[in-house]
Image: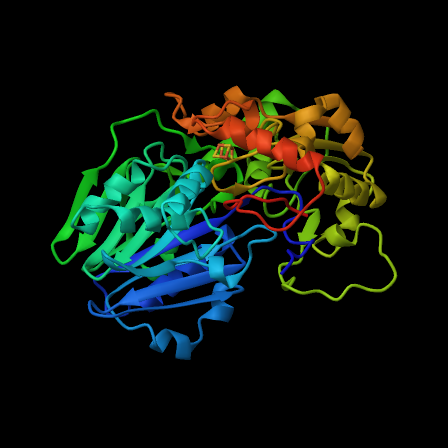
Length: 488
Ligand code: SF4
């Protein structure tokens, strides 16, 4: 299956959302609702595993949550504990076999595992496991963790998990279902969010708190970096499997990935995004009549920009929210069709106006150029593009779908060259200093590698080299590639 080319063009994409419930008679149904609220974190496949304490059942499918889980499917997932996963995969590894949760029966019993993030040393660990006889069923990095659990000589799952996780490096927010309970685990650097909530006597875990709101659960706290929480009949048990290391929360979660109605890394996303816009207005003011967001990614920052600059905010671009997974295109080529099918300018607002156009990021620049052209064709007198984060110069290896470094326009063009490419009258990026200020990062707890090229883990140089090598030779058959890939 290929990715629809019009789908969120020219943006980074988060790749997974996870959710879990323990201690509720309708655990699978609540998980379904949790995944529904986390749909923005992955749209290509989803799955739920549930247990009644004796049997573990699961269902996975390609597509969106509401399409996959019918009443009939849900009624076949009984039990008071469940985990779920929604996935945005990469070209070449969209097959159902890679959909999660991954479910196995091993010497630690039946286990289901859902993973948000990406392991940077998965290839090395996999090669070692294969050389000692492991047979992998998927091309997903997540399966490495299951093999490490199965190979552990520890007697219990609770002992095997820390041992296995000490052998992997990278980003992982995990939910794991076993007959005796649910485990929620976050990597020592805490790249991806993972939150704990409570619904009456039941416990819930989710990538973002917006999933708790839908089911009426109360947000309790974050699962801490390096923490393993076990939810079982014994209650909540917390332990740490790693000595403390410097945190590397993904700053892009605040810029774009997470929903603005969520609290992540202990901070409301809306608050960060509005502050991004305010600081952007201070750093890059413009003589303008209107502030126009690129919906929906630029909306919150545009509100902040308008408030700070006293320039009125107008919805000058209308987004079509009802674009399906398949789309019949006309035989005759329509110029910039992929953007036009998603966004349409409001000519009556834009004609004769000087416009500040706000978006969260520029990845390749091709989509922004099309949007600028559309607005200019609507009669705008000036277009001042403002971006609520710094130029993206390097790819992500921690669970975000990004193009290669060479494809990132910020990696090889100056701001002035990018301005010329997107055909704007002016272009302003938020500085890294202001980005950190907007998320209240006083202690250097955030990963900023896509803006700086400085990665907080080992193994990344090797991946960058592999990327260069892959670009230098013609594309061949599918290889093991974790969860990264190219967009558009
Ligand atoms: S490289 Fe960028 S997108 Fe990836 S974890 Fe770091 S800040 Fe987030």
